[in-house]
Image 1 (tube, rainbow, N blue to C red):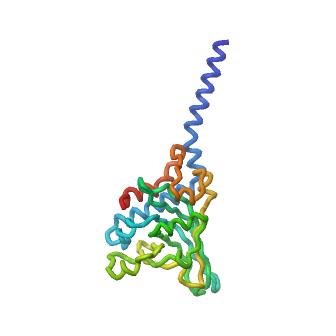
Image 2 (image 1 turned 30 degrees about the horizontal axis):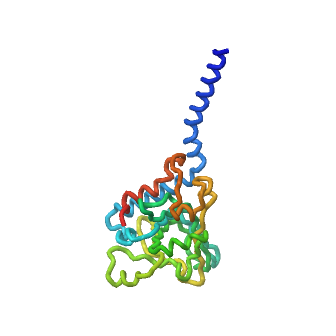
Image 3 (image 1 turned 180 degrees about the horizontal axis):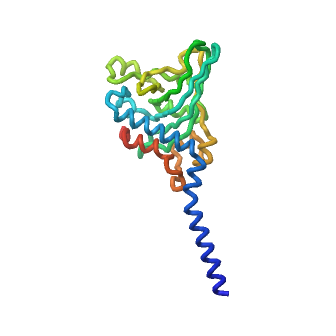
Length: 242
């Protein structure tokens, strides 16, 4: 009897050990796209921080209340219509650095040159004010009106540019073939753009909605797959202090 009980305990112990070993791998397999997004966005932050003459003004990103990177945005044109779509991450600045990456979708559509080429590029958003970040409290954000994204300036900044940027909520850049340029979203009535939470990732991954992650709600990091914090880690490493 005792021998049987000992065998049962041994088997149970082995099963528990096996579960512990399998859990990280299972988590990795469950969120491969999310891991790729965070890692790709982190690499873009690293490139912009380390490559001389990248063009991203360090003084702006150090003042930003949140930073979003959408590593692969696809722009497709058919007849006179253009559609842009891509998935990325946004982290907000908090007391101890940056939040975990909240997963968001960028999308837009409108009239366009019918001969424009299809392209894939990255988009970087700098949310310069608390009001700009607070707009996510309702869920998604339409990039229009006061929340339109202005074309971000390229380094070095002039005093005139600094003055023009006073009161700007959101600045945007396109990153294509290793080159950065300011690009605007929401200035034209012919095109509509917006940011929406990808809660099909946020909820199962964190147990939180995207806006809750950006608000700084606590995330249990112990069970997160390796690679998910990559974007947060890049921001902490290169732009930790404000």
